[in-house]
Structures are given as structure tokens and as C-alpha cells.
Image: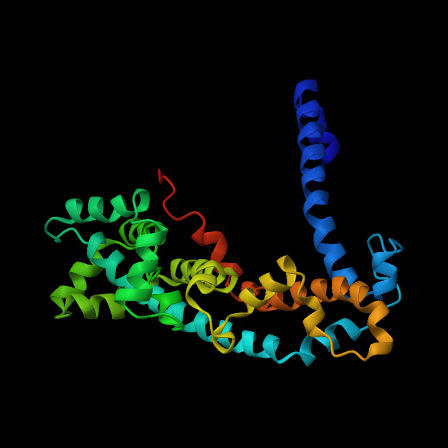
Length: 300
């Protein structure tokens, strides 16, 4: 099959395919190598990693790095806090996005063009960091409160527009009219007709919001001073940027010589541990993802 395909291709096409494959291969290697290296280093002995003995695959396999990670209560507490913020924040995001996207997708909403322009305006202009900080900390009193991580980003205009486009282009408006004839209210139409037919877009938007909450640390850095309320990513930032990996280890004085080396490998273990939840969730929504990325495409 490939020989016949090559015969039908011109010399220029063959050269183009070779160049494209080469660059894609280089990009794939540049992406995969750091990922494989981090995972391998997390399972390798500290001496092997710091001495450069480990290049790609694990050397002197050990689980000591992960044992040290889970000995630290801040990691467990950070996981708990991050999951609470993830599920609560994503739930708020989805409710707000659906309640904004559905009315804007209906033909009978008066003034929806003006409303959409006002909403879109917020994508390009904002109050800025200092006014937002003053609003949340002083006037709303949300310092050391998880709501400070959820409410400011309760809705993404970009995601709302994606969902609105899906409602308009993928679900026939005649279904809404039929529901109204059968006595459905607008809210009933949303719950009984629109949402059951919107599985792909709901899954994709929920994934976008969930990944955003899980990876976010900047708002927590601003508004969370209590370590008991800090998400996992905030603690991970401290480990990676402030060289706090030493605080993960409970060593005696006879092991202090290996502390710096083990600190580096523990960093890799923390990175892997913090990435696992998203890697577990993604396969469950992957089948919707292919449909979701095509939302808004031009239809013939």
C-alpha cells in the first residue's frame, strides 16, 4: 500500500513528507524525553541521578523517594485541598457556564447581541492584579478562604462561547420548540433536552476547568496564607522554586551528607505524584475530547 502511495506522490511531495516527519520526530523527542526522565529519576537512586549515571531509564530502582514524599503530611493535606477545590470549583464553573451559554444560544433572547458584546469585552480588559487583590482581600474578606480560588474565575468567557456555539450548531432548534409545545419551561428544556444531548461539550469544558484548577497556584499564593488550606500545587511550587525538598525528609544526622542529592530526586517524585490525578481522569473523557475540539468548526 505504501509503495503504491509513494508512486502516486511527486518527488516534491516525498521530500515534504520526509521533512515533516523529521520535524515531528524532533518535537516528539523533545517532549517525551523530559517526561521519561522525570519518571525514571523518581524511581532511581539519588546517587545515580546526581552523578549523571541515569540518562533515560531508571538506574538502581528504589521506592524510597515516594516513601519520603508520603511521609510528609503537607503532601496529603495538599491533595485533599486540591481535590476539594477541583470538584467544587469545576461544579461552580459548569453551572455558571451552562446558565450563561444556554440563554445566549436561544433565538428569542432579547438583546443577546449586546449582552454577548459586554461579556466578550471582559476577555480583553480587566481590573488588574492590585484592584482584584483589594476586592477579594479587603472588601469581600476572602483571605484564607477557598472561595477566593473559585469565585474570581467562576466562568471563562472562552469556554462559555464554545458551549454556546455547540448549543446553536449541534442541537436543532426544533427540539427546543417541540419541548415548549409539550409544555417545557426554558429551564425544563435545558435540563431535559439540551444537557442530555451535550455530553461531548460538557466533558471537554469540565476537563478544561478541572485541569485549570489542578494546575493553578498563583491565586493560592496571593490569597492563602494558612498552610492547612494550601493546595498541592502551592506546596509543589515551594519544593521546586524555593529548594524546600529538604523539608520532606525525616533524616538523622548520619544521613545529612545525602540530603542534597535525595532532595533532587524527591522533587521528581513530587512532580509525578501531582500529575497522576489528571492522567487518571483524562482517559475517561478522551472519547469526548475528539468531538469537543471540533466544536465551532465550519459546517458544509
